[in-house]
Length: 530
Image 1: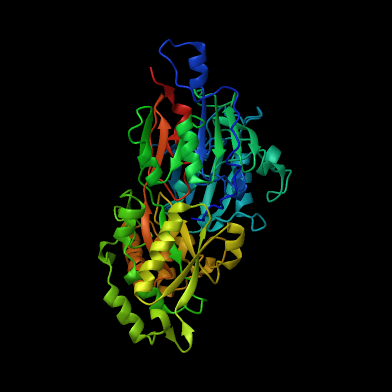
Image 2: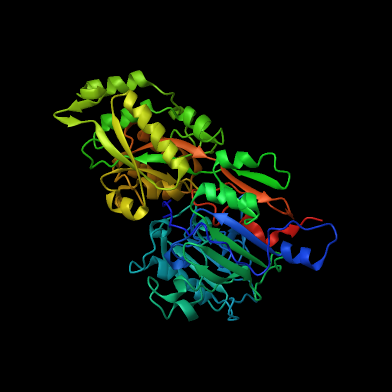
């Protein structure tokens, strides 16, 4: 999954809302109390680049503006959304038929039709559209409407995870269809069928939403909410403590400072979100397999979990977390500095000036970038550099904006974050397949291993669980022998909120969190505490 660009935020600006959400309600049940409960302000670290599903927004679900044919419940089980029921599957998994829910309208009052679904999928599949996750819909051969309420997908091959890909939000053709999907106003002025509508987007500051009067589901009790964009973790915590925010996503060290606050509650979400160092194969140093294997052996993953994450995470031995059903336990390995030194010795990297190794006049030295303002990534980068130095490899850590980092991703290492939920194909294919090398944030390391490509294709193109398990097991083992990334930790996501609502839950979360994921993933279901 791609790394979300973090924009600079006007962190000192106060978030304006129609009714203050930050004063705790009293016991009298007054109208003022009801008003406060009906509005929420959440602090997040970043904002989307676009709000158009045609460019990738909400593709994994949980968009408050849009709905997909299907959605996920708390446990990530698929359930009908715009579709009246789960799809009918025929032809050995090559045909999926969806019947639309009756009476659904977009927030502008226009009815949803099967043609809107067809337009959405055909547009994201069009190579002229800048939809960066197009490879996730590679199995789609055709999508067509049968009448106003039936949509039929025909696949090229049986794709076990296809139904889960139909959480993709549906857009109105009568609005988006008249615009260039890459540059049109729809990107910042979206119209959907979801429980809320966007009322204001001040880039780098806030996004404000209100309840959709045409929503097909139950009417939300939370009538409006604001996502305050506060890039700095410390500022976000300060604003939460002062009452300027009702809730916020926070790193472990700052979430811990609210432990004894009786008016706040901390929510912890397990995730597929991992931190890893990309090691471009075109780099003069990182292109050497021995260097990459030595770094894998030298890194102290357990120390990173304990010291950087305060225990809120797990060591990452590969892209799948250790408690995932597809995880290959045979790849678990302890830190082994002696192995790292042996690998470098055998490859001709000999100790030189200042203890840094060199080979054929090339010092074992490279730059590692991390996004400025992300303290957790900075700490991972510094710990990684410290571990690498013990093996004789110099890692020069630099913080920078994504505008600076992006042009360098093909040749320089990056402390990156990835991870997708729902199926092993989600995330692994875009992370590792050679056909996607250098495609935006896909395959940032330009990784190219024929055995891994073969495993990815095998896992994607069969519905047989045993065949898929064997393929993903082979893939995980291959990544140990020929790493393109140094996998460091899987991170638990922490959120702190004013304890004033019932109905808050968390899901197993992807890398992309805070904005769509978090206890507010189902904010339309919240109820004020009695």
